[in-house]
Length: 219
Image 1 (cartoon, rainbow, N blue to C red):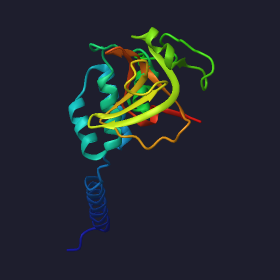
Image 2 (cartoon, rainbow, N blue to C red):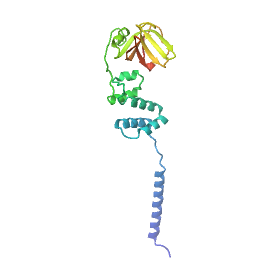
Image 3 (cartoon, rainbow, N blue to C red):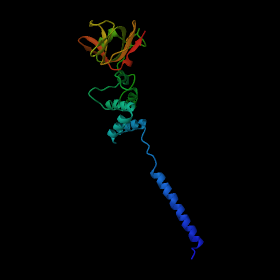
Image 4 (cartoon, rainbow, N blue to C red):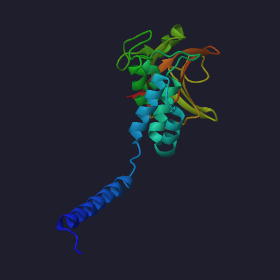
């Protein structure tokens, strides 16, 4: 006995629907997973820190494994995102200490620091203003931009000591100290400027710096 035409048509329709469903499920289950980009991981790490929730450790691990540049930005940001024993309010100071500019921008957004802060002691006769090297001693313990004529850049096993105004061993000199950093040669007749905190050591006014790019060289 032959099946009615309507029954055959129904069977064909069911087979087509089943085939299409199987194809759809197969395509869906085989879709490729798209991993977060480096910028997305950095944004996630910052969001975790700001909210105080989420798995920031796994996010940092992913950055460390795949995104070295963004990882450094995140580490610099996290290192200064909470109050420590040394509170830093000046964004300029952070950049002078070698903190990534991208990290400082994030800290400024959090109001952890601001640009143009600190005790200003602008003098005359120096490039774009600044405190003269011979006045630095009077401002020990404050953040300043100090300028002076280069006398020497002495390399030691500890790093580079840039002396201005007077040369070593004069106690009247001002010294920019770069620990474990060796600078490119600086030509004669240069004026150098740097920003940071002034302090006295054995009577010598000096300033510690970490990034050679933070030392301004004028001619």
